[in-house]
Image 1 (cartoon, one colour):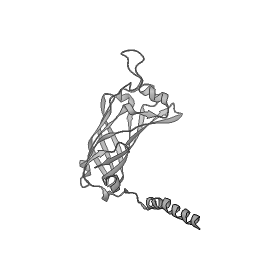
Image 2 (cartoon, one colour):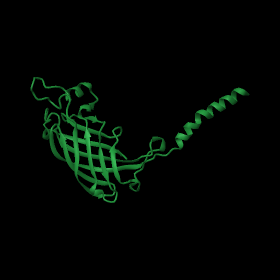
Image 3 (spheres, helix red, strand yellow):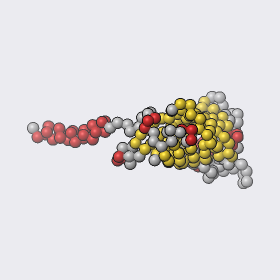
Image 4 (cartoon, one colour):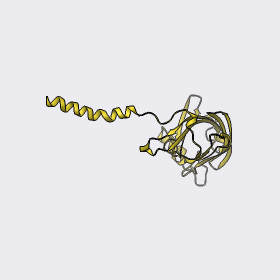
Length: 213
């Protein structure tokens, strides 16, 4: 009889943390009442910029940039006064193809020449909001200046509130807020027109933005 008892005890020991994990609830939800005001910092682990282009009219192609840093000033009672300032490390751009990623960061073919895209050691991109137009409590249009490849131009983003809440105590118990955003830019306007129109001039942006106090 001892073996079944030992097995039962072992099962209980294994199952207890699993049941505790299953009992946990997600700390965040799409509830604007959970948003608290103040100064936030971008969560570099959970903030991403996804970009896509049309390749020869045959397929879309996607890439990502992560490790984004920055700040968000937010007052739930005055959303139009919100301000965001983020830095995107272009040197960390990545695609599903090592060869293409290398091409994006490749040095010019000749000394003193212009690279096809960003070249090695590109400067980080920088977005600073200039206005926030509130559509309703969980949607807004954010306009700002994007500096990319040494060129600064206005960019407009459609922003949706994704969720808010506190992280569990064991993870710091900090206030978090997250958004999704979409927009488009023309790469030729930033001096990145190599291959147009074989590869589309228009770049579609999809952004996941997490901020934490």
